[in-house]
Length: 371
Ligand code: MG
Figure 1: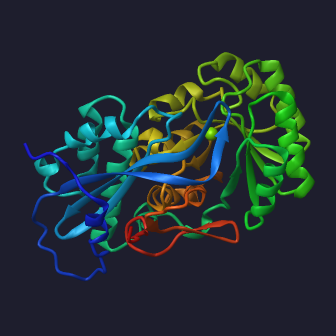
Figure 2: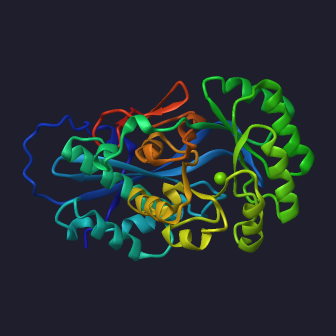
Figure 3: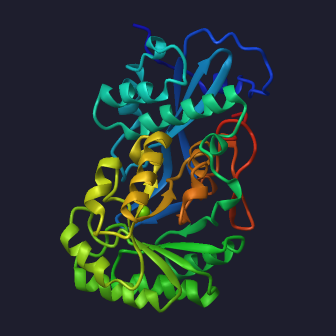
């Protein structure tokens, strides 16, 4: 069986982006290869319960008929527990030679998902590479393939991690180009309120709040949300621990602000049980196995009357540009992951005056950079 292979990133940069117009044979096999990378954080990043300077990630490329699509799965240590050492053996099991072409994407992704439970980051990298490949073969952007209007993309928020008063003030001042800020809370009451008041001493811009499961008591969580609602906060993400759904439903019922599930919502099958527990869900490609399932989550939230936002982790412009293809359908977007790293491997989606601005390049709109 011809499985996937590991390769150096030099091999990836050697591939020329598709320009369109070339006559294709429509024959050949898909070949999948992957490269583990480490992303250096611009600042040490701290959220409730965790701090890091480096984020591992895995790059995937799929080549078919002389065209290469790129994908990525970020591997944040606190989130899913996948590492370079676990995702590479998984990716090595994938044999795409059994499929005729990348347009059989439903069958291909069902096969990949069934190989082994978990590995959502690696599965997302494969999904993104397939979508990028299909867009390049058709010579159209993925957002256009999905039938979306690029101009409907919302502003992205810019995230400020848990830190000292001086650093929070400096980071808020650095965030001038962004129209919406996001603060990470979920520590003790004094620190949480210090962070919000420090931001407010610099700017009145609207805030999103992510407590990352930090408030374990429902009455306290509601009190914090009420306090935040008087400070131009637009929504609160994952106030309580992910498994505490009854208390969370009570908080949502009484909350003056919309609540969004992040850690509580991993995949499509989680969405129905979160109806009535949260007002909305935060989709991340690395949780839900990629764009294909993300679009099913969008459809499910629409059917249930729930809101939806798109997030990311510290990833290159590959994953972030892939997530941005869904931005036109989002109530909120948190797509600043590529801005938090010092060594991006791609040029892709841009933030212009705080707004997600999709380009017209084929696929997910990225060009590999030489590294
Ligand atoms: Mg979150």
